[in-house]
Length: 576
Ligand SMILES: [Zn+2]
Image: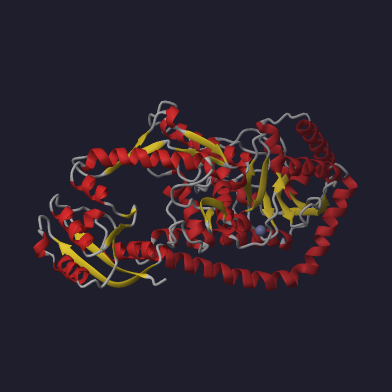
């Protein structure tokens, strides 16, 4: 069987706002021709002004001549409107083409019959809307069978030779889960979009830069986060499009609930119920925080209320980066992960850690390590010994770290300059700056830890202070074991524990970490301190002061000076 010959026809109309270009129309027609097994032999096109008649359009005249000479069997157009919007012209064209044995195909409806032309030409709006209902009923039948009449949703792909069926696209499904996880962890849609763009993941439309509206926006404000297909449910016919007769612009309207069709397709689930619930809870909270329960704007509370955890800001990965909450389950347990690995992929430690388990282990470790005077004396002695051994290595590392830090600062300035000049897309700069900042903070932290080890200060241990310290740790441990999570206890805990480095371990292996304690705490610092004065608070926030009684370093806030010396008691392995 020989292939049918087809020509494509496109018409760009300057009187339609945002009209498709001829090239775009050709692309659509080409797809249709390929699907129908047509061989494209020629293309015709016109650029018509408003009110142009058939005789002004050289393209359609040439097409009609070629039809007369029987040079093709089918003409493919995007829609019948392209051939003519004129009530009289369209039937005339159709009649002549039919006489020449040429069929008209439109991209949406395929082969066109006299009835289409008649409908189009005579009482288009009424009939077409009924036709729309007719098509919708046909679609509804397919949806009830778990099939999809529409476009392929991101995360899925069509199955060859099974029209309307879908399967999970594993690569895209990974991206979907990542978006849900990041959203549930409290990242803003803009940050999620910037991260995806930076990681070179193509958008659902195949473009380079992600748009934050993909996740929660869209005409029904549903976005990916609100699309129930990701938990294996088709929710169809919730909205329908309707054209404004005056402007020809389509609008989306909600349909009555009894018209909704819900079908379970469990094999298409990409996101777990827990993750879905967490992400949609964040969304609801944000919506309520921003617009209030009645949809009114309210700006007094932060967008996502955060429950300050005892370990907030204390946990670090071996790479120097902070650990941050990566996901929270419905039951309220949170897991943390290295921010560099989780958010920026600049670290390989992708393991997540149960925050409650970590806290229990850190408290247990504290009790064992910090309530035994002999152990403390041993640790302090070791601290001094190691210092002399490590000094050489430390100074070498310090040089390369300082160099890298200078590089990062220079790069930061370059990006800030680019931002001012507008020579680079803002999202790109923000993503790069965020990366640099993550690395910088990690580097500074590593240097600080090293400086602490490098400190020349001899620690004198007074037995009385040591005894008081052990008692205080015991008291603190008891308080937390009894769930007395008061602000005072938290403050004391933070006076003892400077930071905790969580070591990467195999997937199901017990957690391992090293806690770093403040030397001052061991040396008799008041663990349950009185409240700070306003002046002290200001100093801690970095406001300069002249009379803080510390001539060595008058510019630095007190807390930063205190944070200078920390001591490690050795790596702790959690009970399996
Ligand atoms: Zn890390």
